[in-house]
Length: 195
Image (tube, rainbow, N blue to C red; front, top):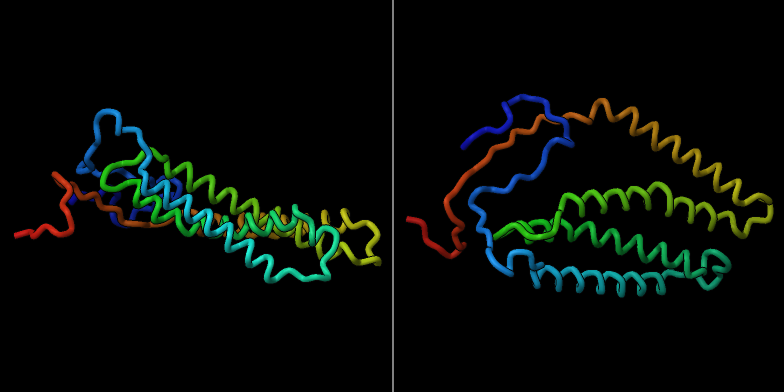
């Protein structure tokens, strides 16, 4: 048992990276760079099920009175993709675990996690609010300049988001997390009896 970071030390959250344990078995030869078949099938089945379920949810909750942008394929695509993105973020943790055990996989999960969270941030802050603002003002005859209305609302939303991040970053950027590294000689099956 070795402590990698002294107890009580302050560590920036972005400096913590997952390390590979020395006990991981490496596969040699042509199987070394192959993607795990179970992992691939699992992800494809979840994506298909999520897409199907999200289309069914959209069809169930759509209003017959919707017209214009609210009933367009683009707006429906935003809804389905947003819901599917929420499903995908939930399965990233089991994918990450499966990719790292019993041997390190070929998928760079740091890139996958970073891409997923940047995509989520773009949808939460830009795409979904802009679509919502445009949908709510579309049938309103009082507002003549609809794009200007949407741009003003998006500016206010971005102002509050940037302000919240700027205010909270100095207080939440550092974390004191004790990290320990365990070393072992070999992997054991869960059914093995240890004397």
